[in-house]
Amino acid sequence: MANCNLTNLQVSASQLALLENLATFDADVAITDCGSGYSATTLTNADVQVCTVSTSSSDDGGGSHTLAIVLGVCCGVLVLAIIAFLWYRKKHGGQFGSTKGGSTIFGTDIGSSLTGGDTTFGSSIWDDPDLLAARIEHRDVEAVKLLSRGGFGEVWLGLYMNENVAIKRLLNDKKSMQDALAFATEIKTMARLDHPKIVHFIGVSWTNALTIQAVTEFMDCGDLKSLLDSSRASSLTWANLKCQIAIDIADALVYLHTLNPKLIHRDLKSRNVLIDAQTGAKLSDFGISRNRSFDETMTAGVGTARWIAPEVILGGHYTEFADIYSFGVVLSELDTCKAPFYDATNTNGGKMQDVTILQLVSAGKLQPSFSDSCPPSIVKLARACLSFDPAQRPSAIHISYELRKIMKDEL
Image (cartoon, rainbow, N blue to C red; front, side):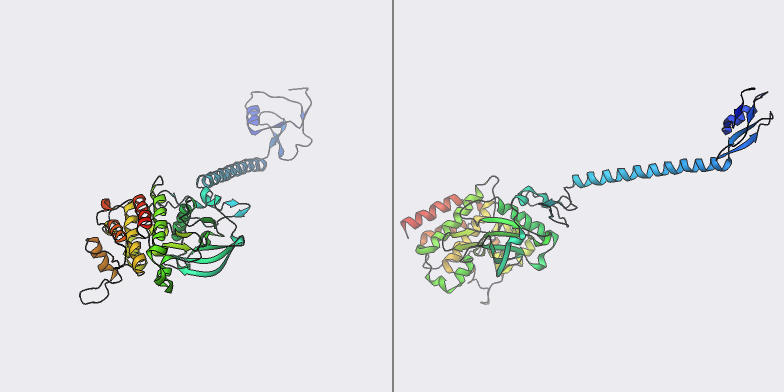
């Protein structure tokens, strides 16, 4: 490399080692300024100076390279974490808060498969298309007056679109995620029913999971039990109203039992039959009761226990004929204008307790009573409904036919 007139020849550490291993090396190199990060080094095998990478610069470069690798790995992990989060959120139905109309539906999620009443926490029900399709603005629903309070919910007179409506809510002490889930399942059932003898469902509203409420048509005469308990009961006869109420209930059962799949009410009683001066009797309350345990039903007292069919008390399979048994009990209520088994007494003449009543009913040894003035054809039909063997009970269609025949021919 003689006569080349090189200036500031820069070599790496490996190149420096290679040059020093040469047997002979001669070059015309002039060192003026090696520049930042380089220093002048004299070869061991020749009187030649070259610019080599300084030790400190080499260390800094290696550190910078390592830092770049670490930063790259961290960024990669962060990107993968974001992708995993988005995938999880999509898979689990937007549990972190879904929206409709630009507003958050629920910041708290509860889940349900909504199939047969089973629950699977982990998939949000609040993205359910049936609930969203039935949703109305919460601010458009105004609660005016408390009408009734039961074991699980309360009903208010309200206003919606300048019309009287009924608003059904959970009780304050029942506002748990499990209760809200059960109520949402009931609302889904209500939303798919459409029959003139079933209380008309208007919509559902909420601001969060625990404020969910169902809005239905308002029935201006209240429930059948209240009517039978009132002073007006003395003016009721099978000819002027009782038979028609029974027909209305039977028609509702015909509709429920002919759905595919069949829908079993499971809580048929006078409290769940509502009366309107213009439209007659209609069936209501679909769902919360069927989520109760049997122990809860037993402690419900006159609220539910006295309408339960024998096979249900014994833990048998629920069929539509359990509703038929309950209908027979309602016929007893219509006739006597009193609670079923009101006249049942124990051996010392005291009032018989519900547990004893259920034991006797489950053994086929006790049925609700009827008055002497009840039409024999009504008593006969009611006794058939109250048969201990479910297979011996008539269908809802047969009951509807028989009641119409009785009203036409006998009343």
